[in-house]
Amino acid sequence: MFQTFRAAALAVAAFTLLAVLWDGRVSAWQGDAPPAVVTSFLAHASAGADVGDLGLNDDTTANETVTADPLDVHLAQVPDEPPAPPLIDLVEDHEAIETANAEQDCLANAVYFEAQGEPLEGQLAVAEVVLNRTRSGRYPVTICGVVIQPAQFSFVRGGVIPRADRRTPAWRRAVAVARIAQAGDLRMLPRDVLWYHADYVAPGWGRRLARNTKIGLHIFYS
Image (cartoon, rainbow, N blue to C red):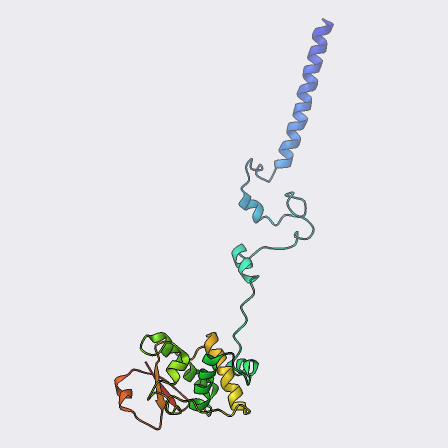
């Protein structure tokens, strides 16, 4: 009988304990819906949790709000390419008295005699016409061959290039323009522009070609 009484007492005590625990749980949920069993990662991402709430935050990021797309942030960190220097700066950097070789010398002479009084853009355009001809398949394949070709450049007499005054700033600029044209980093004309003439003359062949542009006193054709 003692054992029966003891078992009954234990059952009452267990029931009382469960009632207390249940009452506390109900009180904790009063006014709020029970917490969801499964929480999406999107809920964490938008929760604005305090430090340590999710176990993924630290003091350096607790107060930061991520608003940018990660790809945008990555692209923003890529530095922009610096703009190309203007032609006048390139010319100043490449001015010289001596040319690198005979081909560059012929190109510098073409610039010097054909366009030394023109703006730098016009001088570069003349050099580009010479180079365009070497690649066209319609003219000699060398710079000197193009320059001394009969009846092409008026400064050439009998296949001979006159001697430029190499002590002048005009010659140093011509060398610089020849170097820039050969490097090809800055261009004035398309590669199919093969002809030009001064605007104070009107050769008959100009009417048969497509006018491309005018720079300084020279009109360029393709």
